[in-house]
Length: 205
Image 1: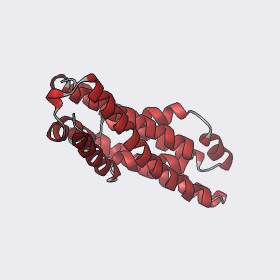
Image 2 (image 1 turned 90 degrees about the horizontal axis):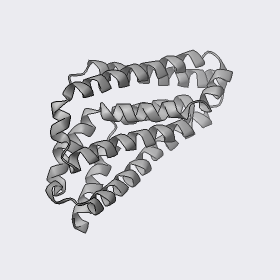
Image 3 (image 1 turned 135 degrees about the vertical axis):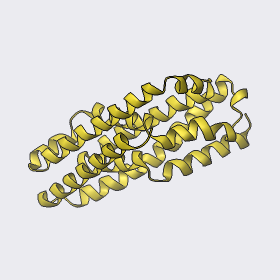
């Protein structure tokens, strides 16, 4: 692949990632509810989900993915239920400041898993990698070295953009330290997560 192709891919991915979608909405809600570290863990999960689809597109697994569409339905349901569970935990913790602080330091793995699942169930991600990517880069001529570069660019672009979203949300949270305000933030974040969970569950496959 040429430098121009890598640059075109990076720009297209950056634009797609910067446009708020269910992943960004859930990331901001998770960060508001649990703090910056959870936002970063969520971002890493999102990025790994993108890398999964990148590998599928580059190594010809798109056909296999289409053949096993039911698997992605199960993933979508799983992501929805997991986001609903996180929303429920945030809403419960909102009644007690000590629970809010405890939530900030507990189970980073849950944030990572949520980010990964919501990326796998996000139609915008699926369309980008399995439909748009072949129009941007020469999929049929990608070698392992090209894939390694694409994976590195994907990781860099997504972590920069998603960490920026998490940082903004974390600053908003940390600037409002009063218990009553934190309670409202938690309940607002829980509501957003619940709405994202419902959208993920109810949207057409």
